[in-house]
Length: 175
Image (cartoon, rainbow, N blue to C red):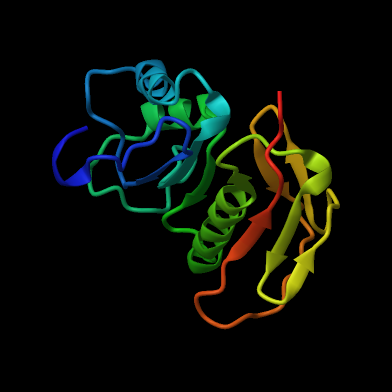
C-alpha cells in the first residue's frame, strides 16, 4: 500500500469487520466470495478474521426495513465467518453493542507479538508497578509458534497512570 496509509495494513494483524445495515449486501459477489476475499487478506488464516453483524435478521418482522431486501446473503456470511450478531431493533441494543465492543477489545488485546524469539525461561511481564504472572488464566503464557504472549481471560490489572504500557523483558533465544 502506498500513500498516506502506507504501512497501515499488516498481514499478521487481525482484521475486524463490522457490518451495520438495515439491508442485505447488494453486490454481485456471493457470501462465500466475500469471505474468501477476507480470508485471502489474512493469508488463509481464518483465526485472524473477526466479524460482527448489526442488522435486522430475516426472522424479525417487527422492525422496519424501509423496503430494503432481507439480509439473506449477509446471514450466510455471518454463519460462514462465525460472526457475533445483534439486531438493530433489539430492546437491549445499547447493552449488546457495548458487549460487542468488549468482545473485540478482549480478542485483540489478548495477544502481544514479540519482536524476536524469546528464551521462555527469561520472560518477565509488567504493567506499571504490577508484575503479571506466567499463568494461563490470570496472567500470560508464551506461544513459541506465534512468538507471542497470550494473556489469560481472568487477568486482573489495577489502574495505572495514563500512558502506562505493558513492558516485556527477555533474553533472545539462540539457535
